[in-house]
Image (cartoon, rainbow, N blue to C red; front, side, top):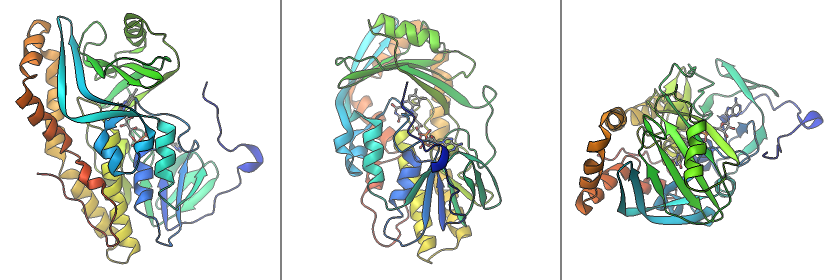
Length: 373
Ligand SMILES: Cc1cc2nc3c(=O)[nH]c(=O)nc-3n(C[C@H](O)[C@H](O)[C@H](O)COP(=O)(O)OP(=O)(O)OC[C@H]3O[C@@H](n4cnc5c(N)ncnc54)[C@H](O)[C@@H]3O)c2cc1C
């Protein structure tokens, strides 16, 4: 069981009642927003129900270039140049044009948090009335509010699973140190979705993700672990949004899973949470600078997120298509897609949905991000 470090009892004093910026959620998206707001002299409060890095929220694999651009190299556990894909009838090894790395969640969050100067408190966010956010440690009012709370979108219109565009993912983390970055597209594990095994130096993250929220992935996660000769221990799972949503609502900014920024088909949501978190943070910075009004920042951030809609729609179409391909056609299709030129082309396009240069060191004057063409 993870150790709960969150403040208890007498430590849970009421929060200060106001702030210039309130960031709700201190995982990838929230920490990326906070990073853009350092050295401003503004009162920025960030809250999360857990301590920073306390509860891992993913298998923690991301493009290495992104981690390096944000100064997070020390959290990397393993780097992979190849992706191995298994179908029921074949195994293919793809040489990628760029690398993926697995990292330690707690260390990465610690490194990101060290790059901001915001005030952090543990508190559970319960909801909002206008610009006042209700928490279990009292109300906080702020003119600039960010919801980086994940798929529940607590400060906006939330989703109720399973009747929502959500995938579900569950993984186990046996202690073991070997293997490749591997994916299984196999109905034995999940009718629509995929299984994975991501080694991270001294542990392996083995899991199953289902695009259909009604398919329960626990039994097949155990089955995949058994097939790999690994123990089904140390579970971690969650819902994963697979549809882009409005990145602003009723005066509030949404970043990461709360805005559906996780990519359909691959369920890669760390890079995009960082990417849109940075974009959101830069808009907030411009407001604090006095260069834009809140309404202008809301509109610009909303439009920036919406510019990516076509790419998200394509990924969602592919997510719906892949499970419909008969297994006997899947193997030749995946084999054909293994041609080096195709792999380079498709993975480069895929990376450009949220390209690493966007993570470059923030400049003193607010610099809006531009969506890659
Ligand atoms: C099993 C699994 C494996 C995955 N593997 C990968 C992967 O390898 N690579 C990848 O790119 N993506 C992966 N994803 C997707 C990825 O985890 C998410 O897209 C990503 O975590 C989104 O980041 P976020 O900051 O928006 O939200 P989250 O990481 O979910 O963070 C939300 C934060 O808000 C806090 N919070 C939530 N509710 C409240 C509340 N009411 N009050 C206070 N605090 C609250 C939480 O404690 C948390 O810190 C995986 C998802 C799952 C479920």
